[in-house]
Image (cartoon, rainbow, N blue to C red; front, side, top):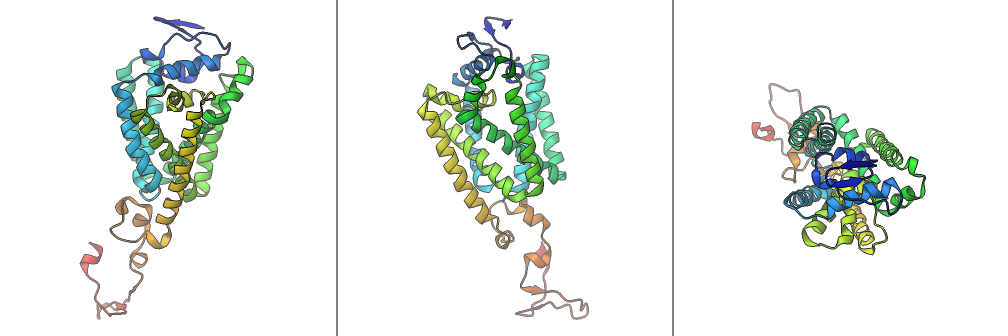
Length: 313
């Protein structure tokens, strides 16, 4: 047990350490339930239940980005890679600097810089970006499982194992997601973005429109720290709606990213789609047949028309 200013908490969680620079996180958490996991999730729950400008801004951004991910995640391939890289790297860097320096300013500054660098990297190395998307999908799955099932299991295991067990679970799921994305990129990225986007949309709406304390359990901070629904039906209803929206998002994305539709001009996010960048002139214009007849300068097609500069402008 560790003593901090105006507060006493069981300092046993990695999430707790990552928020050392956030004074509001250090709240009074009793040992009523007798386990470290509950104390850590209680501290996260307190911060999540507080209202403030920061949470409102975060929820608004989550709502917009979540809609994009849910329905256009794979279609806007490079935009998705950049957003995922920026968000995940910024948050991870913030946590490390927040815990090690106890300075919010340093943590935010370094987090933003690392996020920008990661964005540039994954756009250049798309395989790395795809793996990161898959890993992020694994983390989202971990959060969902915490809310529905795993939080109950943590409380049932010996206290000595409660600190490292959630970390092992999230690492395994993240690695599995990254490996699957490397093997079957499109389906995994679609599933990951649809699930993550649906959760972001749900949480954004919940945070902006509702104030029921039971729904504080669905806050990302609570779920990452190992917290769960705790028997509140509103929380289970929230996750049910998220799953339904995720399924809808998967169906929409699968239809929108079929090979025969990716070359269509004027589509949403056409310029940042993977298919647009990779396709050749022959794929983009299948009705045009090219010839090596330089003298004729004509292209064989149904209308025997000459190819124009505007076609590839």
